[in-house]
Amino acid sequence: MTAPTARSRILDSAVDLFARQGYDGTSVAQVITQAHVAKGGFYHHFSSKEALLYEVYGDLISRQLAAMEEILGRGLTPAQTLRALIADLVESTAASAQQALVFWRELHKLDDERTEQYRRARRRYHDAVQRLIRDGQASGDFAAVASPEVVTFTVFGVINELPLWYRPGGRKRPAQLAIELADFVLAALEEN
Image 1 (cartoon, rainbow, N blue to C red):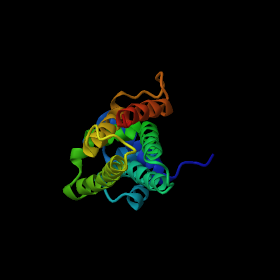
Image 2 (spheres, rainbow, N blue to C red; image 1 turned 120 degrees about the horizontal axis):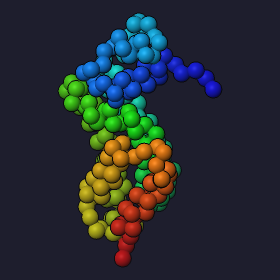
Image 3 (tube, helix red, strand yellow; image 1 turned 45 degrees about the vertical axis):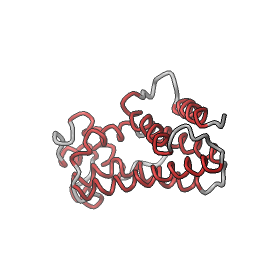
Image 4 (tube, helix red, strand yellow; image 1 turned 30 degrees about the horizontal axis):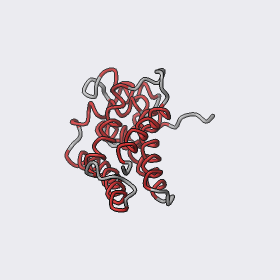
């Protein structure tokens, strides 16, 4: 196992400190001390504390978007694609639940430009799922029981709330949660 990089130590320290003390209650000096990096090492990776906050979640959404592109490129049926997307979103969000929770709680601290960057990234994913649902309904693979927007809001609503209620030591593992959510959504979309 390789040692964590300075960048990952900074991110991990920031998540821990932001979770315990809040964004405003945490200084760059505290992050530097906990991460065991020099001040120059911090600023080599992050231009500011706000840039660090953005990256707390930016790293997750970047990985999720890359996985989305890979899943969409597989040539699966609409149902298989939706199931794979839900599985990846649930499992990656659960694996980064503390980061996601910190980000949701502190999102309002970002400036307008970074807020817009975040919204564009999320919109890319939402648009892809809406397109998948719309195309699946048009082809007859999915029933038109609800609009693509409502189906998408349902999927993301559950997943976005996951950091609030998911417990790593809980009764259900992320893979099981993903199966149940996908089964629920796909059962609603079955053509009658």
